[in-house]
Image 1 (cartoon, helix red, strand yellow):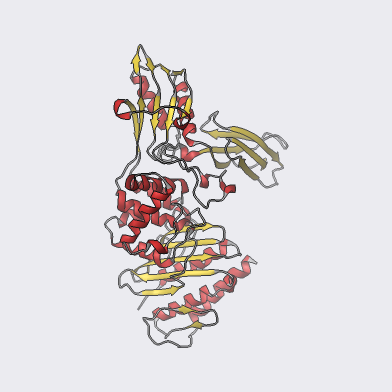
Image 2: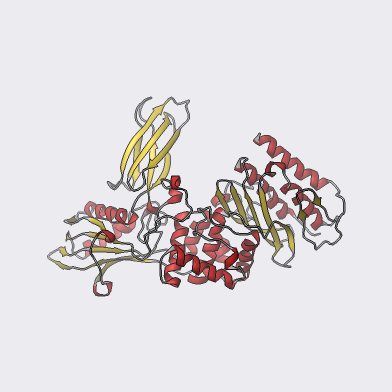
Length: 511
């Protein structure tokens, strides 16, 4: 069925390129149009031939029960190349990250860095710290192995080394994680409850570590019917693993899934792994990232020979009210700049990073690290660039919520504004490159779109989006947004439609 749909769309595309179409409208500057009953064609200029072709592509019967919203505009002339349902609202999925990262650049600047401090309320005497250690979170998503060649605990090792240099060999106190920079709403409104186990639904927290996940590597046992071998990183006692994965015949397929019961850190791993399988890798979320951070830090300290008499604790479970201005800083961590952080958000479509930045906007510019204040800050900023706050629905920063609603016209308004802004290069460089990297790494290869299209993908069930920039054959820069909702066919068909359109735009010449 998929092959038939793909073949049909490709045939329609090439047929429309080769056929002369009936002239109904004679004004070349008039937007293209589709109605439910007919396609309106345009006179035979290069631009109108392109519009006719796009009409045919988006009239694909595979999407007869779905909706497309599309807009393409020249960033040099301002001319609308193509428009279809551009003012209708759609679930944008991860295209919401375009709004989050653009507003973050505008408000925070590309050089913004997070800072996380390690404080003590005690004194060092004879190699013993008589007091507690406080890890004060600031919303930083980057304390992980992502920027340290995979060494997920490098920051904690560096902190332990700093304590050793101060002569500390023992701590008479607790390791306290302070996440009060944000509120305690750790999931977004409209997120699916059954996604909570998986990395893309990691908890939001002002104090976070390793994307608030544990990384799994699963290997087959030595022989058929042996339990699989499971390794986790970090190797921590914070989680409890229940291994229900069996090694199966080398000709069998590998199928593994995970479930972490909400409110616990018991991770059930079940399924089968082929005897000849390569390591199966996945990242699974933890409950209470603050306590997770404090626990792993304690484990690292102990691995360095520093004895701890106390326990790792979440500040919300204590009576501590630290006055940091009167406390001593023992170590700190500074994140990479925002310009690098937004690359993770857009190229990898990393929801956790997006949500951390989103909450940071609320805290710094709204006085509260909450969803409500973050929405307010983002909407107020969008209003300044011509997007009405009353006509856009924002419920999170990542696009995981199905309650988000945007129009293709709003997306392109944002893209066009950023194109003219001094920070455009940072925004542009954060987007996936077709056929090269990020979520577009495997798409549009060996076409004129490869290395040309810079665009953000978006996906939640029944919603697929692609918005960004492309240069035509003449070198003319275009902005575009394509969103489809409510389709019931494989997402690969939606991808193919988007890819064909991007290829056609990259090949377009007015000459």
